[in-house]
Image 1 (spheres, rainbow, N blue to C red):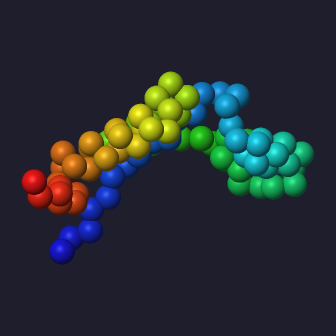
Image 2 (image 1 turned 45 degrees about the horizontal axis):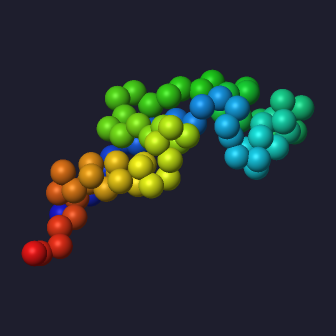
Length: 82
């Protein structure tokens, strides 16, 4: 059986990063951490993601439904028999 993958892009709006990410970002700006994406390592959004999740606009439940619908439509797993 061949492995399948889905390219997913988690797209949070600017300024809506989790606290842990914000702390790490400050440390990277002070030079305490190197290779930090968006600070000293360029940020490159994925090319042609199959699913884009808008974390604030769609919310957790909406994004989970979006992922499940995508996977079901492409037969990643069997649906429950009726």
